[in-house]
Amino acid sequence: MLRNCAVNAEHSAPQFAFPKSGVDIYTCPTCGCIMADLEFVHEQYEAAAYYTMAFKNKAEIEAEWGFRWRYILRAIKRYAPQARVLDVGAGNGYFVSLARTEFGFNADGLEISDAEAAYARETFGLEFLRGDLASVPERYGVITSFNVLEHVQQPMALLAQMGERLEAGGYLVLTTPNPTCIHRRLRGLNRWSMVCPPHHINLFTRGALEESLTRAGFEILEYGTLSTYINAVRKIDTESLMLRRAAFQALKSANLGADHFVVCRKK
Ligand SMILES: [Zn+2]
Image (tube, rainbow, N blue to C red; front, side, top):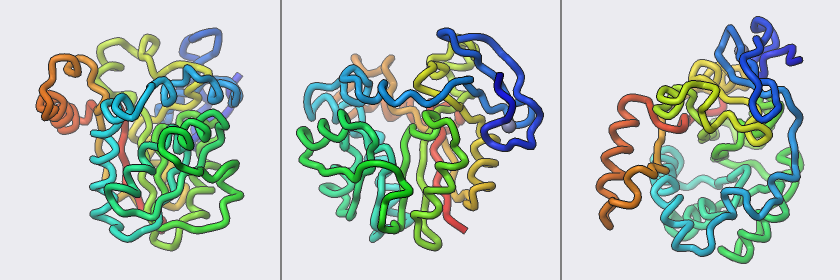
């Protein structure tokens, strides 16, 4: 039984919605946050089948993530061209690798998974920082965190830790699944693939995400949605990714993209 909204314990009591994969899913009547009643399960992030490690080589990783990471890195370059960057939940390491090699950032990755850290070392020659964010000694001008917030049981605690590791006026750039994306609209909440315990614990409406960030001491500078894994167009697209760009722009302008994309600043 889930007693409190993950965004704010003062919200109305979460309401049971439906079971998924044997886990009870709740929604918050106040902010719309979608919550799975379960604890964080570390072991899943060590599985070689985990999605960030399912790719065999750099070309496959580039096809999956290159478009997204360059879009985000261009945005960071506009806000903080010289900043030191920390990517929290750095996964296979491709974002940190591009940040360093193509965009000239001094970038570090933090990762809890041994398997991911080994993958990034072998694939991109990266040495990640390991362990908890609280144990990271340095402060950064930019912290990024892509599709991590939905995986933790206490998102407010993670946002507070990110704030502590940012310099005054530093930027937080994050993505997390968007419950008003086109897939959710077409399939309904109980068939939306992002409701997938034990991977995702909390899924944030735009309002829930903005309240979380504001409560954690951030000012939101930019909100949009990203839809960069567009499978329907992938096989028929041209080398220039023309269809992917067109679909990306159409979904973005309607805020129907798969993920929220937020740039905010520590107050
Ligand atoms: Zn709530």
